[in-house]
Image 1 (cartoon, rainbow, N blue to C red):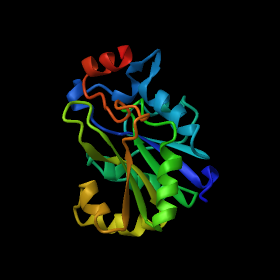
Image 2: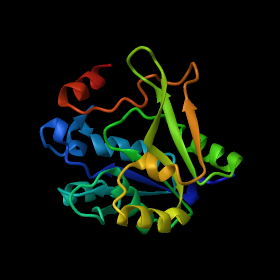
Image 3: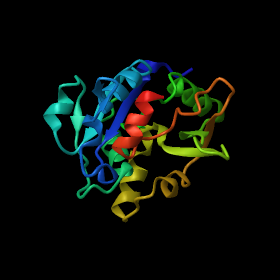
Image 4: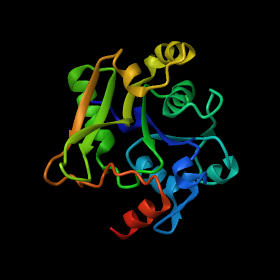
Length: 205
């Protein structure tokens, strides 16, 4: 059984926030606190260690009390750059990633990913959740991943050759998809707020 102390949580807050008008998404308010802090506290309760990946307003993120690391790749290349930064800095055998803009992700996310990873002897466990809009298909959520840190070398090679798509990289490894579609799973668990209107709507829901 993988213990939570063996897992480092990484909040991905390094994006441009272009669909939110270029604001720093992780610092927008959600129920009275910055979105990324809300996410970090939810993840911290499930892991032994915490990190934040951010590319601007670093002192604001540092005030959350976890180490903050910018992308090791230039020009906001996307979530895989955050994965890479996290794997390079991770001091535990496993790293779990969550984006900063999906504040209702499951409280048992890490436990269920870890159980599946161990059961299938996989290298990556990836969450899948129901679409909020009908038809409520179950769709993979590739930014919610539990990774073995031994994947660092593979990801370095993939990104250095120009690879940027998470799915293209995870397809190279034994990946188990973990559905969060049980009757008592929150259908909004993986809803991400791309605009301020969506964020305010999520607050009221």
